[in-house]
Image 1 (cartoon, rainbow, N blue to C red):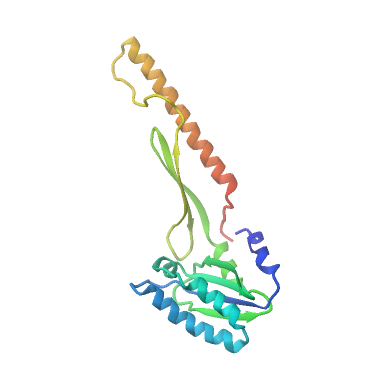
Image 2 (cartoon, helix red, strand yellow):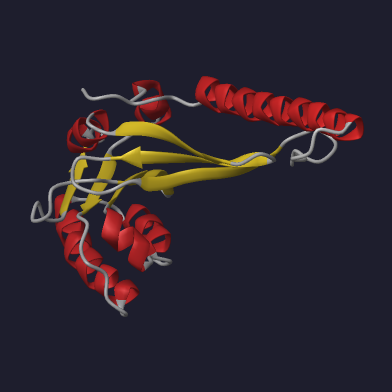
Length: 204
């Protein structure tokens, strides 16, 4: 992973509350489950000295928890009245929830897991364009979709070639070939742009 993405967290003035919620199989009452788990962590942070404004900021961020977030796990960092980081956290099931109140954010577990994740680009193409999907594959979970784009080729004219050999059919055939090549170039150009603008993460 690109550690520079965490720079803004460490540039803030502490101390910091760091909260880890492990991934669990979500139920219909996902929000209630997260609320109960957070309540136990909040008590720990309060005893450790975390102020109410910091705890309230995290609680507000967790207020919209969904089944998807439960299935993926979550890490949050807050200082003062602001949540500085809220990211999905892939970790081996059974690791458990955790919370820290320290002079620095406790992101070692998050960084180690993120460093073992891999970004992949999935392309489903046809003659007229493609669907380009960005996934992140982690050690303990399957692919997680990050973004999806639909690419429509700029080639004009039909892409279907006639089967007969008349002169007019040959012209249609050439136009179809030209359109197919144009559309393919558009898809490749989009893929190259996505790859250049993303931050691929390989095994640590």
